[in-house]
Image 1 (cartoon, rainbow, N blue to C red):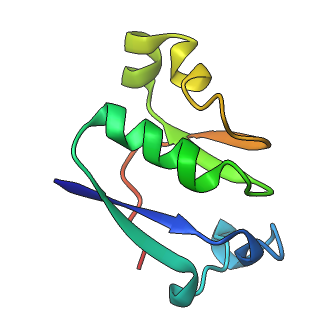
Image 2: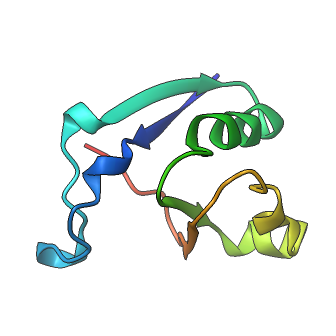
Length: 92
């Protein structure tokens, strides 16, 4: 079982930060367990559907495998920013 970490919506007070990073306080991160891709998508759609902005990373492998479904599976979200994630990013 893996975990996903969510940032609360009030975290993104500024889109500019040193070294190209968003300032994220540890208190604004919640870890949720998930078992597979389907439960991961359901979890994001359920927990983030009322967020002002959701940032979702994707890889080229996902895009090649799922095509536009890479983005369409998050159909319950409002404003979503998809970013290319060429490698895993550790949230400390």
